[in-house]
Length: 490
Image 1 (spheres, one colour):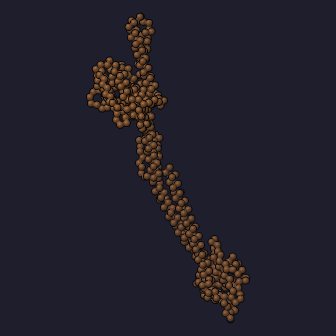
Image 2 (tube, helix red, strand yellow; image 1 turned 30 degrees about the horizontal axis):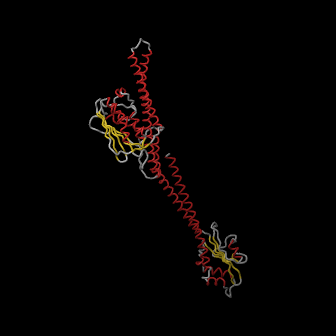
């Protein structure tokens, strides 16, 4: 990639320099030629203009004793050679016969084959001055018809453009030298561009190769704020996002494996018990006492109920995960829901000799939520407090309002949860005391379901830190419901 891009940069710079030199050189050389042509004709036109009356009179006025008018015209032109720019080397004048165009004399010997009849001479033979010249021609000329002593003559000025060609040659030499210098500079610039462009691209290539090998930890250094720097920042962001996504996928895969293992483990125990007791009942090994048969059937029923609870909880979580479980939002008194929960668990608490205290202030508002789901959360929290508090314990059920939220807390003096397990109590199938949880009929899914319900209500469920033994769980619920703001007229 380095060589390819470097070569491209060199070629681009070379083509740029060559194109620039060609255009500039052609423009300058044409400009010099055009300037020289314009200067030539301005000088000739000025010499034959109205300002030089004496020069025109001397050319056209013949003396009485004059025998050769052409020679006299040549003599006058020689006297005014400086005004005409005649140097007798690159620029000369010739006196031509105004009728035939034959050369009569001049500042230089007549060219071999005579003076060529040019378009300007042709115009002068017709009696009109000739002041035209082509940029591509290798000469410049001007032909001015005059009359002297009744005889027509043509003053012909011829310039071979040697001065312009010399100047253009020098300019061409300078352009070639500038082109060579430009090519050297272009090569140096290409190396500089290669360093500033190719090196970051090589680092990006190396980073992409590492990402392709599965290493997302490398972050490339951003050395500039241009497009390459933005590309590097985007690559770092992409690599970080890929690392996060893969970590989440790995976590999800591990959770799926754990979920399958937990479900298998949870269902295997009741299935084993049911199978064992059913085989005993159906084995036909003697007659079982009625009380033992009744106890076996009771175990089968209890294990069946336990499996039904697990399957029901799994179905609930599946609906939450797939988004098929919609909330039925209605307005209802929050205080009444808390009191109904208290009344529902009171008998169960008394069976365990628990003291249950209800602290319910006046003025709690109505809330917009799915009452059945919220009651499910409340019952789960309070039931856990009753279940995991040794008989004769104390449970406090309290509620209140803070800003736009209402809350309920359940505080007990039970076995509590070790600090090392607190961060995991909302995980599916997680139990602090697995043996005791199974004995009490817990599935390890209740708090997970409660947490899902609260998240869908844009509320929260968390543990409150406390010093004394036991556990305090707090649920908070927005008054206006999920995604809603504004007032409610009760």
